[in-house]
Length: 340
Image (cartoon, rainbow, N blue to C red; front, top):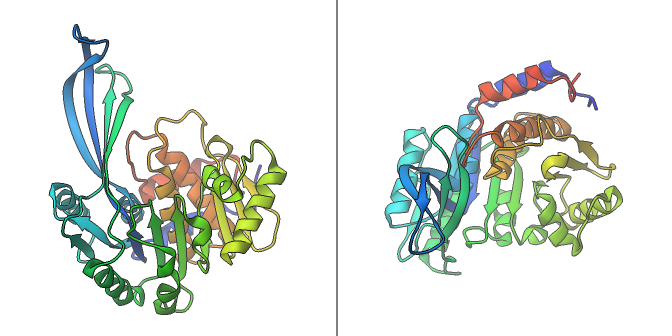
């Protein structure tokens, strides 16, 4: 299925990502990955014993969106709360190593930086599979000095960015109440996008949203199954409820559905194979790419195609991964099905 977009145009848009400033406000999480090689079954209980191999820590949630913006050549401006703890310090250190500003990451006394630890196992020369995950998390207090400082930072930063992103993972860093004041501070033409786990239908007034199909089903109040008619109705209903022009729904192995204005949805087949390695953080990659593309002057369809290419690349990587501008360009150049 070829869509009306040329490789030359898409490649030109990727080149224009460089230096674009994106405000990324939301829940900042540390993703930890502990790798081990199978050793034996325990004599004490029927559990697998692993020999420790290595541990990695990466930015998750809004942090992963910011990391993808940077990997694609943009300049993310992270705004959000972190704990005064080891995880918060490590997250800030990782950002600084990647050239990402940490001035608007706000330490909140008594708050623990959400940390998701995944244990992966596999042979020395095989793909590692996730065995278990445990989350250390708490919801932020609804009020306090940190909330006022966050609003001040958002107001301070918003006027100097090309687009803004709200990444709501449910820990309370951003709420629908942030939309109106943020929209007032953004300069003319700068779009506000949102990705929200469980409160998407409340983010009225945004310019675009990037739910996955499960989140769309939650808003619709029913499963969509394989019905393109139900998909079209649910997507258009949510787009109207939010009052936004654009809705990009990620559908896993079925690709994406783009709702642009009052037009019927454009169904975009998945890029690459549907046999993926790891979908961890793929939605963050889609959000980062889609936002950068819109900030660079792409049409919603062009931005969706670029996000689709980026998503196809990142799911072939293990862990909370990013896509570089070079990788995105290679994916576009090698395409034989989606572009002219």
